Length: 598
Image (cartoon, rainbow, N blue to C red; front, side):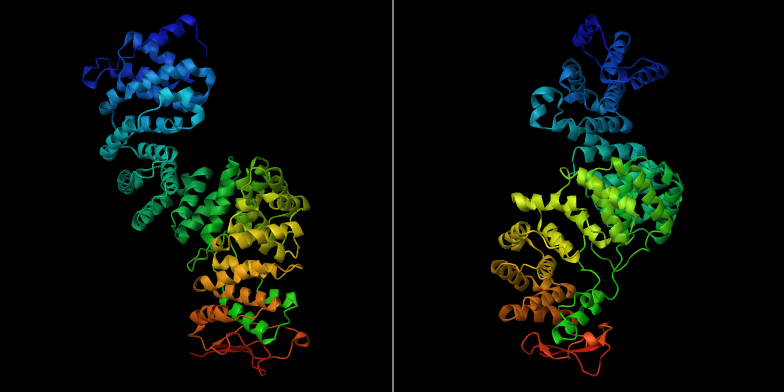
């Protein structure tokens, strides 16, 4: 709504004079009517005009000013960055100047409303592009600190919604250092958990997680128990926020909560409106599951013995992949205690919802969705996979290097060859001197995926990736080094000598961090390159294997089903005598003995 020039002049010259609480003479009903008038305003300009009209007849109360600021933040959160609202910004700046005078008059709800408005308007932002335009409305850090201090002292009186508003604003203003306030909110939330509604409960958990503030385990358990009682009241966004918070706060919900949550989600799946919440839910479900791959270590030992001893032809890739179906490379870590996988009905419903809203996904949502389906081991329909790939290609300019790598990894795990356009775009990005934008983990994922898909990268791409590895090999984790070695051994073009030297040097330095799968991959790759471990590399491999299996005198594995393809079993001294990996001629089923000397 606009205003006449005379009205503009009148607003410009107005000096609001808030009354102290003890001086207020207006009745409660009058104040209620004033606040209602302010709350019904549809824009910043309309709210300021309403406040000016009220000021003609009554002296403004502290609640009137806070209500006006709250309404402006709610209806026009971006007006401070709009160059066409200069006059309104100046009026708002004068309104902000009264906050210091009224702070001690505000109750817990008023303080929470003001703090929420600060966060909504991001009034602490110091982006240089906005300094000249809206610098006059910045509140002083001292004033914000005062409001937070006063809120801290009145939390015992605060409604759960007020606490949720304070937390949300702290996320918006990036106030992670207010540890004492966060602890006090945690304490009060636990005390009033049974009177907190679903929306406030989920929002507070989301805020704690966003601020990276770890709640006590006992607090999380009590909050989860309270949430279980009102889980039917959760809307899709509440469920998504809660699951995401559980993951970030490293809290594993009970089986009862997990099962009921899936049931509630299934019943409300058609009400999902925010596309990103679907992707977030899938990502959270995949993270919470974190199933441990059973028998991974024992199969790895079998392969190490089989390849080294000549039981499996190292040129026969089918035998290798029959024993190890996939690398241990993954975006998520395993957990020994895990929840059951999501119900197939829920996954099917989420798949349909994803297909319905995929057109509105951003790049991160595409990456998270594909990663989640791959991690849960649920292969969506071809139509959805194609739609997600096309969306990823359309958003390639906004996708992070790690997101691109995760998309490639996910498609590989799902057994889908990426579209040629996707691969061409990836290769072009790496070839044109953008390889250093990719992290060491992303590089290892890309190499592993290409090898797994039996795709040979272009000469320019492989050269760029090798240069990145040789230059920054110290950035690679032990597992990434092992996977890079394994992947490079699968390509037609062997890596340069400096690359092999750098990778072997990192195995020596980080051997104590290698798991058995990584050791196996490294050994297998070295055998492909005909580079047997010697010197320090020998001792590193010795330590890695003996550390993990020195206590085992016998381990089992599965060998090739076709005896006609087997080579004659032979002993292979991996470490020159300290660790012997041998195949017994009598054990044609693939059983082996591993003896550790010294």
